[in-house]
Every structure is written in structure tokens, then in C-alpha cells.
Amino acid sequence: MGVTRERLKTVGVETVGVVASHPERARLYYRFHPVRVPLGADPDLTTHLAYGLPHPAVTPELMQEFATTHINPTGDLPEPLPVLEASTAMARLDGFVPSATDEADKQRHFPQLVGQFLIDRDGIVRWANVEASRGGLAEAGKFPSAEELLAAVRAAWG
Amino acid sequence: MASGLEGRLVQVGDEAPEFRLPAAQGGEVALSDYRGKRNVVLLFVHGAT
Image (tube, rainbow over all chains, first blue to last red; front, side, top):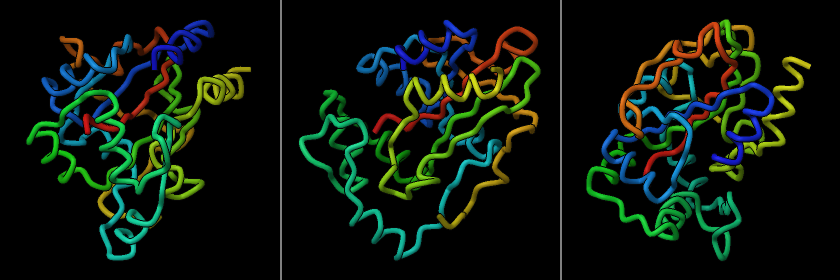
């Protein structure tokens, strides 16, 4: 996120994050993932809801899809893993041990999806991207690259 | 993907919903902090698990 922030800043765009964690857990977690962007902690998903980010209904079909879709979104895992196992394995790679609160939040938030929005200084949305909206669950956890975000900025403002 | 509990997805051209949240770095962060000053990329990221 830091690299993305620096590149966006060169074209006059600030980066702001929102994470679905309690503030104290977010502070602890981001000792493992140092970030230099303002990061709002929203354990109740009120911001996700306000932006209309998908929270798919949990059905047997969805659970089957979660179990059978293997991902390696950052390429850091030795091999692609089922979606839920992948998120746990990635946290483990970082040396982060989830607390009971973290696990409870994970269960409570499941299967909240995330997204990204480009917002101009007048508060108008100029570009939006929603996780897994194009490639389905196989794209879960994938984050737009700095190049993709810069392309969105160029498309919005030339 | 079938939708469940979410509201209407914010679309290009919509006014971005305001938020004010406690920040992981301490203090607060609000979209309105940037209003009239800077363009912003708002990144929702997965939580600490």
C-alpha cells in the first residue's frame, strides 16, 4: 500500500484506507504491515455498507465455491489454497497470530467483499472497482496494482 | 455473485458517502478532511485475519 501511495501522490492523489477491524487490533496488525496511509478502522462495516460493497448471501453453493476455488492473490503462498485457508496462511506468513476477537470478526464479517473508489476533491466518485466482480472468487484478495490505479486516475483526469 | 446484505453500490458520478473513523495510526480519518483539497483513492482492505 505504501508504494501505491507514493505513486499516486506524484499525480496529486491521496490514499485513504478502511479496514474491517477494531482500532486496537488494526494498530497491532499494522505493526506487521507498516502502512503510511491514514487507515480507518470499521469493525461494524458501516462504511462498507454505505458504499454498497457486496456481502453475498451464504448459501451451500457459495460455501462450495469457497472450498473449491484456490487462490494465491499476492503470489506469496507456496501454492494456491482454498480462499479461506489462503487468508489464514497469508496472516501466518506475516507472523501475525489472530486473537479470539479477530476470529470472531472474521466469522461475523464473512463473506464481506472489498473495493476501491477514486473520489475527486468535490466528493464525486470517478472510478470504482469491486473485489471478484470480474473474475469471481478466483480473483478474491487481489488488489489493483499501482499501474491500474494510475490508469484510472489518467482516465478520470487525463 | 449473488448479493445478500449490502446496500446499493456507489456508482461513478455519485457523491461519495462521508465517513469518520478511528484511525489505526491514532486520531481519526474522515473523507471530509480531503474535501475541496485533494483527490482521494479510497481502499477498502481485508481485516486482520
